[in-house]
Structure formats: structure tokens, C-alpha cells
Image 1 (cartoon, rainbow, N blue to C red):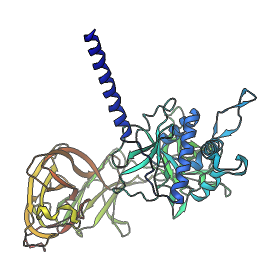
Image 2 (cartoon, helix red, strand yellow):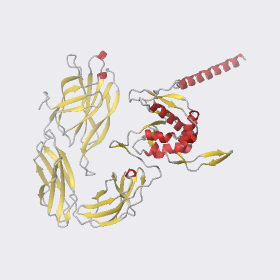
Image 3 (cartoon, rainbow, N blue to C red):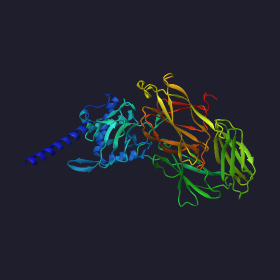
Length: 579
């Protein structure tokens, strides 16, 4: 008997301790008072937040609507603009004389107003003499409901998330906690710094949809997107030019851009060819046609994920024109010479090869003409620091081919010989980087490159150490640390700098990316693409100053601005820091 009593006592103690532990965890986040300041804005958003909470609790259709609209990411984030959903229809049941009836034409606005009156009814006269949301949306047209984290994880059919709002006094990096509400209205504290691993509904104002200082006015859910009209197609010597119109009375707020559809002889149906963003961007050039073939086109306006009815369909025969060159490249041999190379399809008669040159900022001019048996030339008229674009076309009796492009950024260095990269000065502006108790800062710098395979990173410098002296300026000091004698292994070579301010000698591994810039010849686009990021370890602890990159073609005397602490690194090609 004693043994049984002892056993029961132990179980009871474990139960009590377990309950206390749960209560302790739960109560650690419970609040007696709210965490926001008492002002009109906060009070209005708090009331709206609790109205949304009631609506989420009472209406599954509303929960599903919020999730589906958020996942659409109309502005690139998990945001739902209230003005866009206020007239969306929901299902609702109303009890009349004990009989449940489906309410027709029940909208989000009706639900939120019902929820508002359930939450504030004792403060109001009668429901019919007050419409809080019309006034609220007039004051805050960018009012939104968002799910910043874990939107896809939300089981909207059964789960009612915690809800909060962004108070007027909120500051990134300063505000540590905000007031949250559970589905039963209890007030809790929400960590405003560390993202949750569960969905949280956040009420606030949209930061992404202002244009030219004016708020974009979105139409209600029941709206029509104006379809394009008067589509016209003209065959040119290098493709097909399309242009179209929209009605003068069209609501341009309901048009984001246009989708271009094409049907070629090899297609069974129309396929989406391209998209033109912008309501007034009403032309498109298709330079992917084949000579002599017939193509059909039509256009649709789009807004968000919704599209208009099609425009008229047009038919056009692509002009006969010569084939483009097979290949074309621009390569820098040395500081004063660029080599241009090309190859051609000799099955066609070629009158001339035309090369055009444009120094960015100037006009595009014919550079030189060549006979069909010439396949290279040299350009010695160069200016350091300028970007030069070249294009090449074939001329035959039937016309001129589509152009092919390449470009060069004229470097300040001579690619034919090694050029030193030297750290000349480090500076910072944020005094919190190194508190006075630790003395002067100690910077560790790792420098990476990517091999000629364009895949494998390697260390140019393991860890350059630059320690500030007590005899120099606290915030800016000179150094003379050679990074490398740089001769690029391939064009558009790049160095990746990563800097920390070391707080101790303890090792701490973390990863960062070694990047590479090179020409995007596949898509024939003019520009430089940051194409490769490879993770790499940095085995020191400290304050992360961040990444910065140096392209080979940039000035030899340059200051790199890093993202944290106002940190800057000045580089040079000589120890004096001057040319």
C-alpha cells in the first residue's frame, strides 16, 4: 500500500511539474498590457487587427482567400492589399428564427464590419449607422494583410494564426517585440527580430506600390482588363515589328503590360513569345523569325495573373534576308588593342560584312566594311574606362542580316602584363564596430577568385591582417598590403573581398560566395552577368563587414564601399596610392 501511495505521489509531482513548465513557457509570452504607444494610428490598427482576427476565426472562406491572395505575391511579397479584396464574395450562414440560411452577396467588407461590431459593439450605437472600413481605407489606402513568413505552411482550413500589426513607432533593428493576439483574443509578445517558424498575420501598410509619388488605385475584384486593339505587323529586313493600341477610355490602372503570342508553321497552337511591361509600351520587335515563313500574332493585356480577351490576329510573311554571322567576339589583347573575330555561312553570297561601333554615351556608327574573305580586324582607338559595343551584320542582294553583338569594357590595366592590386587605406564610420574597451580594430580580409573552368573557387589571399595602430586615426588608416599581381585568366575576371573585424583568436567557420563576371553570349545580351556563386569557408570570428567585388576592368585606384559599419577599402596599383 505504501509503495502504491509513493508511486501515485511521484506521478502527481511529475504531472504538476509538467503543468507548471507548460504554464511557465506559455506565461512567459503573455502580457497584461499592450506594447504599443497609445495614439490614434495604433488604436485604429489595433481595432482593425482584432476585426481581422474575428473574421479569420469565424469564416474559413476568408482564411482561404487571404492565403491564396498572399501566395500570388502581386507585389513580389506575401501581401494582400485590403482595397483589392474588400468586395470579394464569401459564403456565410445566417440564423433567422432558428433557421440557417445562406447569405447571398456577402463580401469581405460585410465580414470585417460584422467582426468589428462583435469586437466593439458596446462602444457603438447601432450597426447600420457606422461603416468603419470606408473611413479606414480613405485614411490608409495602402492598408494590407500580409503573411511575411511561412505563408505556404499555413493550413487555412483549420489553423487560425497569431495576428499582429506594425505600430507607428516601429523601427527596424530597434523595436524588439510587438503586440500579438491569439485566436481567442489573448495578448502575447511577438519577437520582432527573429523570424517565426510558423505563419503570423501582420497588419500594416504596403511599401511597394507607390509610383511617381502617387498611390496606385487598384480596381475592385469585379473588373475587366481592356483588351488591345488595332494590332499591326510589318515585316522588316531583320524581323517583324508589332504595334497596337488600347481604347482612349481604358482604365490604365487595370493594365500592367502585354503578353505577345505567336504561331509559327511548326506550332500546333499559339505560344507565349514574350511580355512587354508597362501600359504604354505598345510595340514589340520579333527578331527570331525565319525568312519566307508565315507567322500569326495576337496580344493580350494582363494585370497581376489575370489577362484580357485577345486582340485581333494578324498574319505576316517574314522578309527574305541573309543569315547572320555564325560567331562574333571582341577580345582585348593589350591596353591599346581589341581583336574582333567572326565566322560566316559561305553558302550564301556575301557582298560585305558591316561592323558598327558604339562607345556608350555616343552614337552608333559604322566602324568598317570588309570583304567576305576577311574574318578579323583590330581596333586601336580605345579610351580607358569606357564600355564599347560592337555589332556585325551581313549584306547581300536580298537585304541585311540580323545583327550579332559583343562588347568590351576598356580596362585601366594592361591585360598582357601583371598589374598589382594593393590595399592602401581602410576606413569606417560606425563607432560600434570596435568599442573602446577592445582598443583599435583588427581587420581580416579574405580574397577569392574563380578558376578558368568558371566553377572552382580558390584563395588569392587566405587572410590578410590589417591592424589599426594606436598612433593613427581611430577611423581611417593607411596600409600597403599587396593582394596579387593581377593578370586575368579569362575576360571579365573578378576578385571577391570578404572582411571581418576580428574579436578573438577563436576560429568560427561560415560560408560566403566567390563570384565571377563574364559575357552572356548564349542570350546575345549586352551587359555583364554575375553568374557564379560558390560557397567558401572563413575560419575566423568577428563582426561581419561583408562582401565587395572588384572587376578587372575597373579603375586601378578605386574605393570599395562595403555594406556594414560605413567600411571602405581603397585599392591602388602602387604603394603611394597614386598613378
